[in-house]
Image (cartoon, rainbow, N blue to C red; front, side):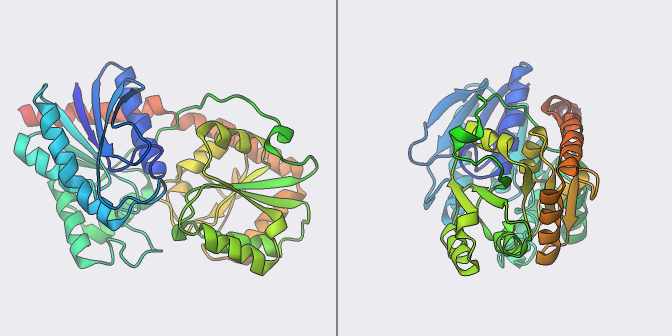
Length: 386
């Protein structure tokens, strides 16, 4: 099968949606399918390369300022750039199906190409393209964006939501003609060189909580920092891996709360460094306001970490309070602090939850997820041909 993938982000640009799309595409290529992936270019990245059997085409966009976040201008300019590249690629050979990641900003490109070529169009939605409670310009709050999302969803041959939470929100907010399907994000086991605490500048005898994500409003870092300040355990420290627009403000909050010596900002780290830090931490913590799915939780699960986080979002598909995680409501600083203290004080519970997470993550490996996608693709291609 020849598959055209459209996504305005591909690692190292963006967050979990780019990682998920890359994993899916590479597994399809490994199984013998031809996959072309059109995405955004940014300084320092190759315009053309092949990664894991997938041909990557990075197209220039206007106004992209950093790796972590896309500007409004860059998102607005991506569909036209993607359409130009896709039409040029199709001169080599036709595609069987178009797979678009994110209803906006990528969706309109898939919409137009599917109409031009009369090809099936599968749209995978990830969260912020449908619902982001931390943003005033979230599509569910803006009539023009809401209409654009609804039109993309209604035109698509099939819509795939990554979690029950996202599926239910899509139905209740956008009322699509066809209900979305649910296929979780696939986890791809990493390869990385082991490293000890000393190599990473971490101390023995200290309990480390680690958070990994872009530093954006939706991740709720002020709540997490406030919770750390309330914790009884003085041996508890917080590692924050990632970068983003909220970084300077978060450092200011640490100073205001008097916890600068207990928080270490690691900045943007490589995939190998990320897993090295995860493997040396004692727990994973994030105070996110909402997650479409939360692939970072699965990365922590793979490393055998118990998890402290919130109970709203796609992570509730695979995190259960008291079993492999401690969950509280978004904004519940006292609840977060109590959960952090509870795990900091109880090594046995940390070990038990971590062991359950190592077992649970095996249910979400990439091969099973891609099998579900390929069954869907075959159905859509056969339906269009008939």
